[in-house]
Image (cartoon, rainbow, N blue to C red):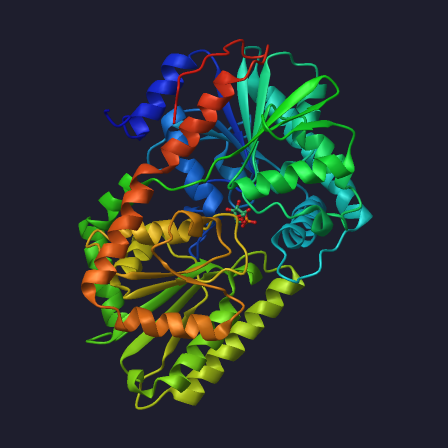
Length: 508
Ligand code: F6P
């Protein structure tokens, strides 16, 4: 039997332009794909925003040419939009619309930092950071969800539209949209973080309202089956609804919401092409010099500076490794890059201080004759630098305490066009279910990560390459176009009067 054709940018584009011709495609997220900010010379400049969501959705919008609605958070954002708050992006190759929504300082403080990131984020990640639920944050969260609902209605116009909502910032938006009386909106949502079991979700004082809001969706996606099952359990125990665990759907108030796992991914082909580019080769040379690598091996970790990523645990593991393996002193360098994130929140400030203290401690304890075992850069880096560092690393460390997926691990694998390099990966990431040829670790067990570092540094090339090949094959097939293609095909299969399609195009 012939293998089904691979998912590519063009195949997704064809699906949207042929099967969904005349249907508007609208993505909603808090984080915008590109941000404008004032540079040192006072000129507006644009950057790629950090984080898995923007990385995954950017290629989808390129293929669909739809509209992306997001919070305009850059200090130069307002100066770059038209009178309808729209701008064509990507800034260097405009081909779809970004509609920016403006929030007041107070809304940002309460809805984004407060309810979303001090409430729902720790609640769902279970990393022993207590969630905080404040009434004023909740009120702001409702207000901002209404603001976005208004923007969606404006962008949707009169014809049929698929609204694809992202993440935990918009639990109320699906229901609001359905209640706004516009008959031809099909609403789907993807939850980018874990969904915990009901006992962990219980402390949220507005859990029924959140669940009810999410049941306004026609389709609700999580990364893995376990998160779907946790969600169904939460529904059963917090609202009046009928859950069907065979068909994976929930009925409430005459509406049905399908619940499905869709493991998110990356644009594998684009990362491969970039990894082979002269720009990446030049960046590799730059980093070799900057890190004074010579014949030293490189280990690296790159992510947002977030307490869920396990950076202090990683540094403690390095410290233990250096204690146990003096034979490796001076023979490798570990580079930790952390893009500043949510710095306004005390738990983020605390983890940053902890990381700085640990780096100082390790370098003081083990550094000799100009060799420092750890380099720490608290800075956002673009894709060229990141891929160059992936390519230079003997091992790449992703030891998140809990992560819905973790696309950084998949990006590392895609960058390794030489099929070399070792991935050390937390078993508590969604990615570990697919990348099981990585060295798996329990991130809370420091000794396991220390052992994994030793295993990575001493692993022979044939084993490194065999493991890497397996992981690359997996990510090549399960790329972000397949993720989007499967979600859209599922939307088309739904028997929603809004879209009137109800076609099964048989996508696997
Ligand atoms: O992984 C969860 C998530 O919200 C992503 O969806 C997003 O890419 C990332 O965190 C970044 O967070 P923020 O947009 O708050 O910087």
